[in-house]
Image (cartoon, rainbow, N blue to C red; front, side, top):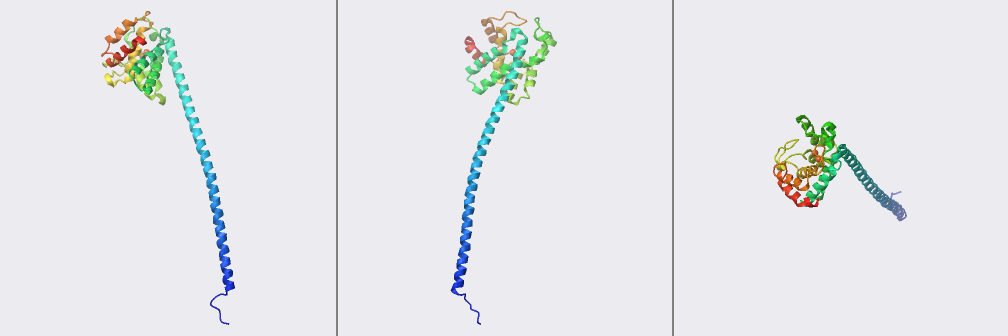
Amino acid sequence: MIERKHKQPQERLKLIVSKFSKLHGLLSASRRLNQGLVESNLVLEKQNTLLAGRIEDATTNLSRLYEDLRSTYMRTIKVLAQTIDARDHYTHSHSENVVRYAVAIAREMKLPARDVELIRQACELHDLGKIGVGDSVLLKTSSLNPVEWEQIKKHPAIGAQILEPLTFLNAVVGLVRQHHEHYDGSGYPEGRKGDDILLGARIIHVADAYEAMRSARSYRKIPLMKDAAVLEIKRNSGTQFDPRIVDVFLRVVDNL
Ligand SMILES: [Fe+2]
Ligand SMILES: [Fe+2]
């Protein structure tokens, strides 16, 4: 029998049907796959949204925790600083008053709110280093001998050293360290001069000196009258104090 070159129409039809059926199967499988992908995408999108929400919540919680920690630290240090003021009943409100005077000067100078806040924090902590000065020196009623005076002069550096590990107080540390520097370079601890002293520290220095004159001290029971204290600030303008800050101080002193 001669082999026929071409298949019978019936067989061809069978072949076409079978191919069509395979194709149909493939198409259905592809459709199912697509459907599956769409569903998986939806699930992934939902999970993404959920995850993003959780990350946002976690970030908010972390920021809150950090803020809590920061304010707890700040309160602890403030209490510590107030304890220093309280050691000497003559100076119990000293830091509080220095805050008032320095903030008034900074606001009059139109310093940015962030800088005013740093000055406020530095004032609260400026004498923290007196924790390292003994009562016999700190509360002495007569004048200090050179050795005792050297002890007192260490307090800005001691205060800065205590605060240094607290990274969120970085900008405050310099102000605490420099609050006894004099404009003419005769101050301590580093003998800095003019604009080499941080602006905030120059402001605190005027506020601190004025507050010290206006309140009683163990070595001076009667505070200086306002006029006498103002005169003393003016007299030391350009030497102990930055003259530009003294000018601003003179503009606000009547409202203090
Ligand atoms: Fe001081
Ligand atoms: Fe002080």
